[in-house]
Length: 154
Image (cartoon, rainbow, N blue to C red; front, side, top):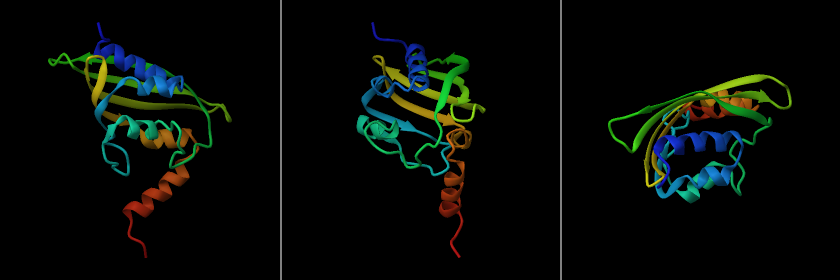
C-alpha cells in the first residue's frame, strides 16, 4: 500500500531538514505541478523531476549560493485532512541554528499537497522566503534582486 498524503508530507519535511535531496525528489511524481505562490519573483511552476532536481540543487548551483549552513528540524507540525482523500494541508516551521554563527532561525510554511499513489502530483508551497534567505546569509542579494525586479531602473 502506498504511503498516505500525510506520510508523504512528513517524509518530505524530514528529508529537507536532513538535506536528503534525492529522498525528497523521490516523493514527487514524474509529472507534477509545484508552485511557490509567496516567492518574491513568482517563478513558473515546476512540472518535472528535472526542474525539481535543479530546485533542490541536485547537480547544479543555486541562483543565490548559501553563505551559511543550516541545522534544522521540523517544528509545530500539524496536518489537516480534507474532504478530498488525496489532499492535505501541512503547517510547520523549519527551526534550527545557523552553523557558522549559532543564530537561531524559524521559517514558517504551509504546503497544500495532492498525493496520488504515494507521489506528490501537485503542491502549493507557501514559505517565508525572506526568513529563509536571511538564515542562509543571502538576504542582501535577494533584496537587491527584488529591487532590480520590481523597481524601475533610473
